[in-house]
Image (cartoon, rainbow, N blue to C red; front, side, top):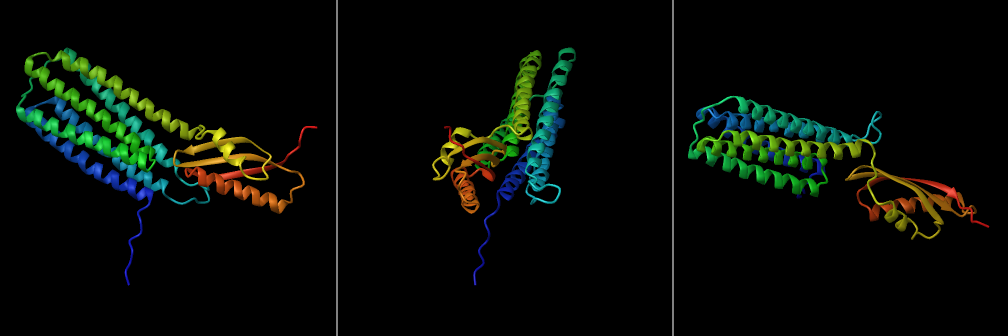
Length: 295
C-alpha cells in the first residue's frame, strides 16, 4: 500500500520561501559583519547589521503567515488572513528604520572623517552579497505573485531596499579609495528617499486591505450574474479583502412571483457561477429583492 504525500498548502509554500530567504539573509549578514570588523569599514559593518535586522522580517513573516493560516473561530468568524497584512506593516516599519539609519549615517559622514581599509576582497564580498540579494528579491517577487502573498511581495521590496544599501556601500568604498568620501553621503541621502518611497508603497497596499478597498471590477461581476436565467437585475455589488481572498456581496432582483425555493436555487447558482469565474472570491452574500418593472 503506497502513501501519497499531500500537496503543501499555500501557507506552507509561503513559509518554505521565508525559511530559504532567512538562511540566505543570515549568510549575507555574517559575511558583511565579519569583514566590516576586519577592515574597520563602518558602512560595511552597518550594512551587515542591517541585513541581520532583515532576517527579523522573515521571522515576522513566519509568525504572521502561521497566524493567518489558522481556521475561523468564534472571535474571528471571517478567519485570520488580515494578520498577514498586519505583518506587512511591520516590514514597512523596518524599511523606514533602515532609511532613517542611512540618513543618520550620511549626515554624520558630512561632519566626520574616518579611515577605511579598502581591499579587493571588500568589493568581492559586496558583489557576492549583492547577487544573493538580487536572487532573493526576484525569487520572493515571483513566489509572492504565484501565491498571491502580500507579505512576500512586501519582503521582496524590503530586499530591494537592501540592494540600494549595498550599492551605497560599494559607492562608499570607491569614494574612500579615490579620496572623495562626500560622494558616499550624497548617494546615501538619495537612496534613503527611494527606501522611504518603498515603505509608503507597502503601507498603501496594506491600507487598501485593512480599509476594505474595492478589489474587483463590479461591471465584470454584473455581466456574469446577468447571464443567469431568471435574474432581472443586479446592483449594490461590493468587494473587499486580500487579493487572494476576496469577499463579495450583491443584490439580485427576481420576479415577485418566483417561489422562495426557486429564489434560493438562483442565489446558490449566482454564488457558484461567480466563484467559478473569479477564483479569488472566497465568500459571496446574495441579497434577494423583488423586481418591479416600470409601468
